Length: 101
Image (cartoon, rainbow, N blue to C red; front, side, top):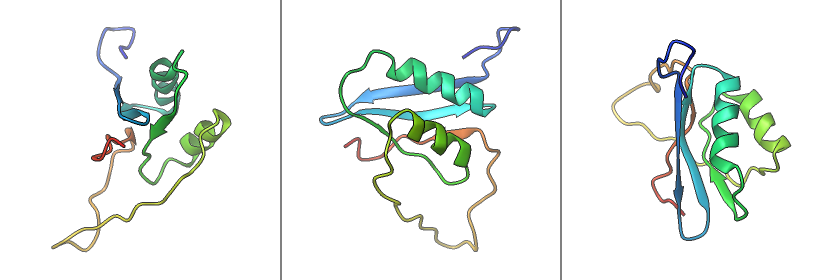
């Protein structure tokens, strides 16, 4: 996704797995950009879709539910040698799942 000045303001990727089309990573400067990327990646796809969303994007989750997505699980987050996860800038709306399944 490019802004009016031609600068990159977001991007997304989809990978066809054995069961689902996986959407992610999705990076955008704002919620509207993330929505547009999801809509473009999913446009016309008739099979099952999967998107893994990190915590902190409640409005994005509402949007996905309105599009027909259902929450399937809440995977654990694990860290080592740290007290907490590093602060995020809020631009990561979906991750690339390591299992692609």
